[in-house]
Length: 261
Length: 270
Image 1: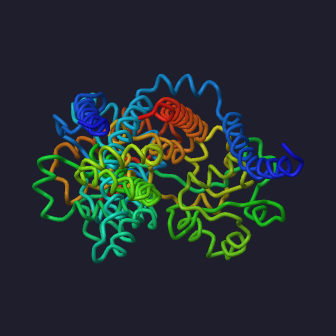
Image 2: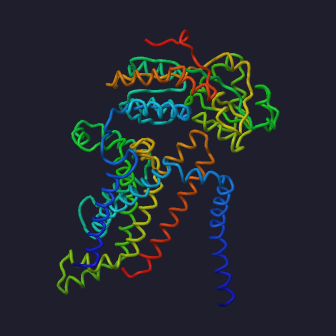
Image 3: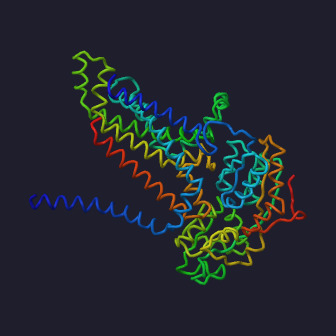
């Protein structure tokens, strides 16, 4: 490595390091603030166990549903040409632009409409568990769609065209050629959607309420603890959330990310 | 079948598994409606700890489920315009009266009292004894916003008559939406003093309460309202009875430092 290269790497390391240092200090401050005894009581509390369980299940469900929408929608926006495409492109970004709590409020208002009443009688949504998933989905699908769209944009359409001249149908080319080349994007979109869903707060609070042992996901637990002044427990729950989220991301990236899927 | 088609099918199988797990999982979640009767209670966040004890007992005794939603009294009041509930418990009578003016309530029952104090860290390191100390240089003050929090409105009304409010408000470095935010500021040392309920200060071991004569005169009544949307007259009445029972609800609230409203003093509306 020559002298100027080394300087370049050092400069990059310094600029990135400032941020990494900030994050590390935040974590250390949290660790120092939370009492060790808090963790012992937390692990035994049925409320926290339930909210962790619900958080994990709902975020995974939201991720799968979001990917089922984001992949086709991203591909459509990337490859298809149709009237109003520019508008649709911006329209799908709405959940990214507006504050998340607006999504929650809008869902509450939507589910008050009388035409949805029969559905709500059959499967209660608002202020029940399905509301958690719907609120998470509405937000994270936009992020996943954006990621998938730029992934497909970066892929040259040539490969699909070659596959189609070799006799593949559009659908076959999509499954056999496009998706395998988009695997990094799929992984990014999936993990981004999951992480967003796992930490989603505003819309869940609005649309699912903060009902203990029912619609209480971890961010809601943190809010409930803060609102009764128990900052130590709020910090302890945050640390549990951070460790779960980081473990999941590391696990996914090291297994799925390294294997040639 | 292409490999990615298999992945897609696998994702659907996982999704089905997750739905099953939710449906038969723990807690009161899932997709079922509750089996027994359900009472929906909108409850001021500051009252969470004592009310949880009342709810636990009530559920054990009646077999009913109480779904409590906790948030600031003002926030809950606006939610009531969008959602249906059985009971609304607010930290200040003002909110209950607003609910009444909007035609949301059938009955209001006040049951406990609290008054503002100045919260400082334990041991009062800055020697804050009076309102005048709040405008001292270098004392960082956090206040509840009169527009958003019940305690802010009451503190302002009490101090405005002697024109104490304006200088303190201008001197404050933080204006907060809920009383717990104010208490958290003092606890986290973002501020040296703040105006909170005496009951809030009592719930924080890290805080001491400085009593101010001006504040003691006015009491805020905590009350519960039966809502028009409720169709469970018997169950709501039973919950209120439990709350007012000297052996049950009143005892729990007294333990948390609330002043109780005796049967004779209680002004039930209408």
